[in-house]
Image (cartoon, rainbow, N blue to C red; front, side):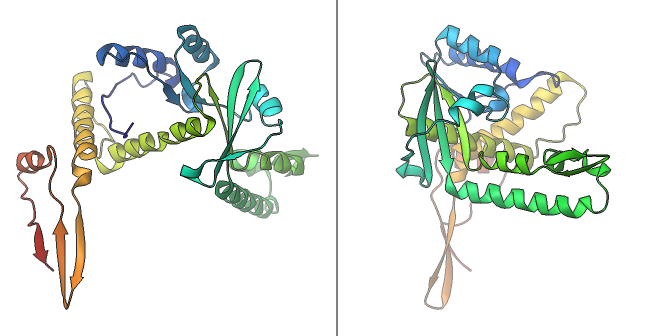
Length: 281
């Protein structure tokens, strides 16, 4: 719940995400003796078969839904009227509940994100109009441009209807859940996935997990394990070690917080001395 990673998994490079979800949860429940778990996942991890499997096991879940590609979401959930409820803890986030044949959907909306989506689309259209004057054939291979193009004889033109239809998705995302949690709490739990994304970015970039130049499974596992261990230490205790600059009179001081948990041991292990609690700049 606080975003602390507890274990890492390695899979062959050709393993689809949707095939790894159920086995991972099975192992987590067994390894850590978890009685009840609520699975939260984005739409890239979910297939219809996965949802059927989750329902058959009666596992609670909060799942991102595909708004454009899933007919029920696109044509029914997003078309339903209803009043949004403001989420005080995450304003300007708003939510409303929609039920379709017993399935519970939470439609989430963020006005700030709507402005960004509209601005991004306007920039794409402006670039597309400029490119069309130079010749349209090269634009077909550009995914960002392609969805706004429509055939026009032997060439292409900007699809006005597509632009209009895309605007209905501005600021919105849809969640599918079988929980009884309040709609606002469902949205907030889903937003916690940003902590997972942040951890992935830290592991890949800050800790330099990638690229990996190993030939054997055991050395790959060792490499990833060391990176994961560093990530756990950083998230658990090292993130709490901070410094603050303070001006007093004509002098500037730096104040260091007290090390917590394994922090002092980590510094000793790598042969680095902690700076003084107070020092003058």
